[in-house]
Structures are given as structure tokens and as C-alpha cells.
Length: 425
Image 1 (tube, rainbow, N blue to C red):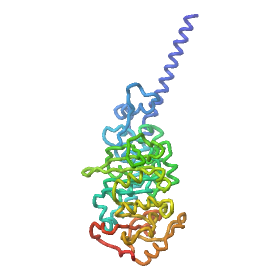
Image 2: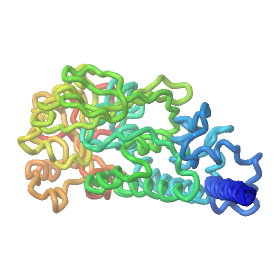
Image 3: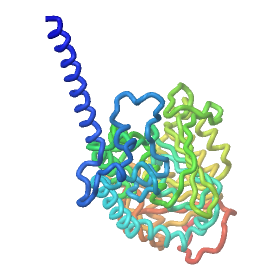
Image 4: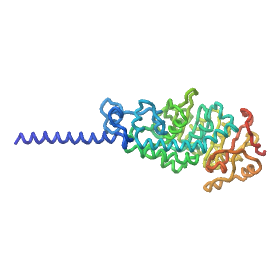
């Protein structure tokens, strides 16, 4: 009888071990790319064992670090571009989900360049010679994660400072999406970028939802895509906070503390060019928000006088609660490029600013109709504004878009190739 009890225990242990091995094998199989292209092989030589197995083990083996992809490979992967040789992401680029994603972005960028970006480049050649020069600082407030247009209007800036209420999020790690989770993650990113690729601006209420999705949270994945598609190489990413005096301090991602402002600093460049830096801060730019977290405006003031871009800014600086940020931009900008939602026409002192007008002015869209500017309409009716071959702001058609270049008098850089008539004084 004792023999049978021992034998029963031994067989039970063997059964449990076999069941565990079967479960583990299923987990490893799910880690391999699903639906591989026809003719592809899943032999160990094509998918490194550590890439296939590590993301699905609940408790990593001792002394074995998890497999992670480099920042640039991650950025290029998310942008639908080829990754470097030897990258752990190469196996994922054979997944039909990524190949569909790459085709989506290739098509979207081709259309975007034809509809928008080529027109901006042509316009700059004629009307904004500053774009070809090195600019110390560009302020793009109320921007959210829209580095795309900051880099288009001012491609040679040394420093870009962007700000919005959208969260930064953690460092993107696409290795954890190996398997069925990859396609939902990539589709979530495509959805986040859909409005800016189609209409030139982010829809704030949609961004609040899109950037909280579990797959790829925050603004960092969007910055990755814009930098990769611009042909940039990311050399460093640092999470920072600004104290009340505007001094930056290294920190963990998205640290929240009373009085400090969360941010990220991205250093990048292109072959043969000087390094450039992008700052993005999550902050409230209302007067109350600045009183609560004064460090951001102090940090910006420390950058000196620069150039500013205002686009799809919700006409916030038309209202009384945004006087501090409006005053800052007028005092710290030599040039302001904006649509009609930025600083109202009456905010520019004609003794200090020379204004040029482009496109057309038909007034705000319905949701912002209370911010119609009769003086701006009268100006457009009195002059022959310069043309623009692209849409900007809430009117995404170039025939309905308003573009204003305000230049501080005495800061002209060179004669313009063509010049629309100046605004009446």
C-alpha cells in the first residue's frame, strides 16, 4: 500500500511538470509574430530566442535583463520606417500589423507633404527668410505635441519650447507588444495622429482620450514619430521638472508635485548639423496656472528673445485670463507667425510691430464665432494679402486660412523675394 501511495505522488508531480511545460510553450509561441508573411520562417536564426521569450515571462529569470530596443529604433519603428541592423525590433517589422502601419504612414506622409509641407517650404522661401537661418529659440505655446509644424516653419532652431496640458507619458517600449497586442497599439498611435495629419491641428478633447490609452501613453510616442519622419537622430531623452524659479532638475517620468512643472528634454540632430533640443512641458498657461506653477514662464524668459508660432490656440489670448502669456510672447519674440486664433490684431502696437497678411480671413469657425475680428476683416478687404498654398489653423483649406507674420521693427534679416503690401497704419 505504501508503494502505491509513493507511486501516485510521483506520477502527480510528473503530470504537474508536464502541464507547466505545455503552458510555458504556449506563452512562447504567442510571443512570436502572428500571421507571418508568406514564405517567412520562424526558425531560431530569424527570431532571437531572447526576443521571442522575454516579454511574456511574468517573473524574469534571475540576472537576465529584459530585452529593450534603442530610442531611435523605437522612434523609427513607430514612424513606420526601417530600423537598424541587429535591432530586436527587426522581427516585429515582419509582422503584418507593422507592415500595414508602415504603409499607412507612408501614404499619410506623401499626402501631407503634397497638401501642406511643400506649400510651407515654398511660402518660406518667398516670405520668411528667417527659416533658412539658425534661430536660437522657438516658443510654440498651446502646441500640445505638435512638433511637426514647429520644425516645418523653423527647421533650423537650436531650441524648441512647446507646452500644453497633454501628459508626457512614459518611455515607449514596443517590445512589450510582441504578439496580438501590436496591432491595437499601432492603431491607437495612428488614431492619435489622424487629425493633425488631416487638418493640421490636434483636437484637444480627442487627445485627452487618445493619450490615456494603455498601449502607448502620452505625447512621447508622437514626438518620436515626428522626429523620425523628419530624419532626425535622437541622442538623449531626459525627464525634468522646473522648480518655482524656473530651474530644471532631473526626475522620474511625469513626476507630480505642488509648484513644479513636469517636462521632457529631447536632444536630436541630423547628419552634418548641429545638435537641437526640444523641450515639452505639461502646464496650464492661464494666469491662474502660471501663478500656481511660475517656473515655466521663468524658464522661457531665461531663453531670451526668440521666434514664436501660434496655431489653433483656441483664441485663449483673446480672453482676460491669459494676459501673462500674451504679454510674454509680445515681449520675448522678434517674429510671431500665427493664424487668427493667436494674439488678436489689436494686441500688436503698430509703433513696435510690422504686420504682413496672407491667405484670407472669413472669421472663426462656429464654435469660436464670438472671437470674430471686424478690424482684421477690414484690413484684409483693404489690401491684397499674399497667397499661401497650404491650410493652417481651424480652416484647413488654404483659400480660407489666415496667416499673419508679425515682426518687431528693426529686426529685418534680408530683403524678401516678394512682398505683399503692408497693412495700413
